Image 1 (cartoon, helix red, strand yellow):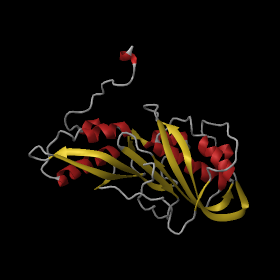
Image 2: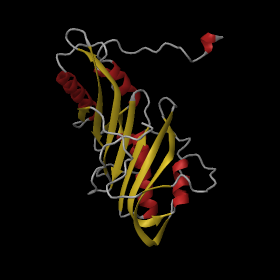
Image 3: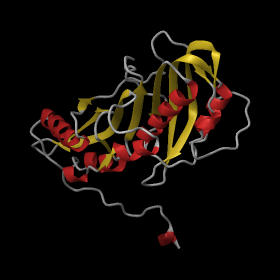
Image 4: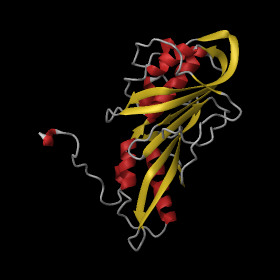
Length: 273
C-alpha cells in the first residue's frame, strides 16, 4: 500500500522562529570514547558549517534569501546536532526582521549560547576549490590496488609508518563514509591529511579510512578519532586533518583538527559539496 511507503510522509517543520530547536551535544561524550582526557586538548581546530538554505522576511513580508558560513571552535563544550541546526535555520522562514544585520545577530547569539563559546557567523559561502594547502602537492590514495574487507568499527591497527623515512606530504581520500548516530543516514566526505613525520603506509591508511564505513559517529568525532589514531600509531610530528562532508539538509560540515601552531586551511568547498 502507498501509505506504507516512506516517500511523501509529512515532516513537521517549524512555522515560527524557535531558538529552542537547537540541540547541544557535549563533546566530552565522544572524546571519552577515543581516549581524550578532560583538560588540555591534543589539537587545535574548528568546525566550519556551510548553510545553503537560509531565508527570512523583511518587515513588509517580502522574503529574503541567503547563505552562511558558521565556524565553531573545537574548544567549545558542545557541538550542535546537525538536524537541529537545519530545523533552527528553517524556523526563520516565516519570521520578520528589521534588517539582515538583525538576522545575523540573532544567529550569532543563539549558536554562541548553545555551543558555549563565541561562534563566528558570516553571510556568504567560501569558493569552490580543491582544498589543497598552499604550496602542497595533494596525493590521492583512492586508486591504490588493495583488497579491503574491514568496514567497521574504525581499526587503527591498519595504520603504520616507516620511521626510517621522514617526509612532509599531503594525502587525500574521497572514500570516507560513516553514519549519523541520530538518524542512521550515511555521511560522505573527502579527508585531507597533511603531515610531517615517519612516512605513512598508504595501503594501510586507505584500509583505515574505509573501516569507518559502517561506523556511527558524529562528523566532528570521526575527525578527532582520525587525528588521535594517526598521532598514536605513526608518531607524526606535525599533523592536520580536515574532512569535507557532503551536503545534507542544506548543510555541510568541515571539521579540522591539527597540532598546535599550524595555520588553519583557507575556507573552501569541494565539487561534491
